[in-house]
Length: 266
Length: 292
Image 1: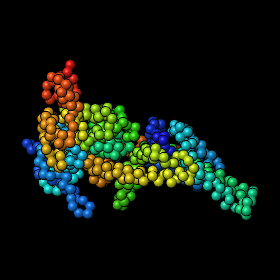
Image 2: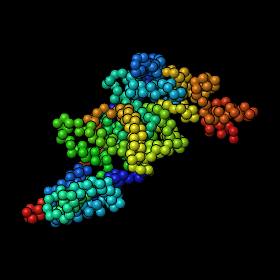
Image 3: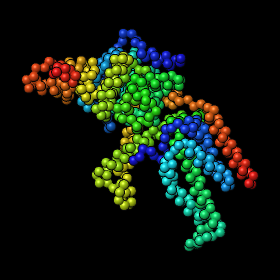
């Protein structure tokens, strides 16, 4: 199994990599929400152009983005077909009382576009931000909630550990699959109806070993003086630089321009 | 700097005449499901001084892991006492000071990795002490230098070899500036090169930094690296001496289910074939210089 999983962090030194995770998270949120509040074509051309520019700037290999998009192919097809048949308007083709409409075709295309934008923006975020930076960003953003007594720091700790074990568990799956295939299990070959039950003897040992790992990790954490997430400090300190400020202003300006275009177009 | 840092430095200073680790009549019993108990430790008296390099050997289930887990309060005595640097492990307020002074490294290098990069993982211990970021950075850099992993600082764990992971775990223990590091079979899942590097690291930490090392191991060859050797059988320490003294007991070793270091075994066989070799050849190096 390739170690570059969809959405996995790729270390690098591009301007996007160096941005503060809070700025990147805020910007991603804005870029994902904008297409929903700004439906007009000019705004979306601007938006799509901006995201393409970001993708080029991030130096993420094109193939990696394509592979990430492949993950949502079925969701995309489903959404497209759903829109195609449920949007009222000029019928193009009627099959058994249900019509495909011209408007449906357009609405379906818009759905696909929004989905692609969502996936590309979120994977740009995870490609250019290490799991630890992401977790620190989440912790910093949610910090006000900690004052209300919510376990924000514990949540960030859990998030860090979960992200750290993703590659480990994938390696484990690979190992178990090979072990079961060596005993004749049909997991990656054979007809689908035989392959699906083949995954059961993969997931049972996976869960058993995950619990054993969790137990070991808890002991190791305790031995290293972990009490609660509260009195901990962090190796990395988040601080906003001039670049972060510039990036924030740029993204806010983009948002303002798009909203202005929408307002002018009524 | 901070009060906590001052505490950390204090761990390196000696605190008078008491031994660093002192066990008094330590017993530990695990309760069994459905009643009954297993007595894993049966009255152990033991002292370990600052700066010692001690190997702890014994067959599976002899209580080695149970014993070492008492030394940083992961387990508490059923009866008896454990003193570490003048602090009692059973005292809840001492526990965190003890864990700062006694680092621990476990068998499976994969399962003790907390963070997504080497340097963040090494920082975990001192982060728990609440040290400021500058001090964390200094400690992480120092610890990585001591184990020779400076250039791997930003690597994720799954890009490291087993030996490198285990040395990261040692760096993680070092980062709280402990006086003692306990390793519970750290090399059993490593390849020969990883074993050798890990052992070299331990030896230099002991000799150059004066850190007390307690190494639990199944390998008699590794045990010869220590200056003192403890043998545990069925919850008791049955032998305590230099590796030469312990391995000099021939027949008893076999009763305990332990082997011999490979150099000693080879020397024995050569003697059977009529070669005249001195006694007490424990390491391959000693054997080689006796032969050539």
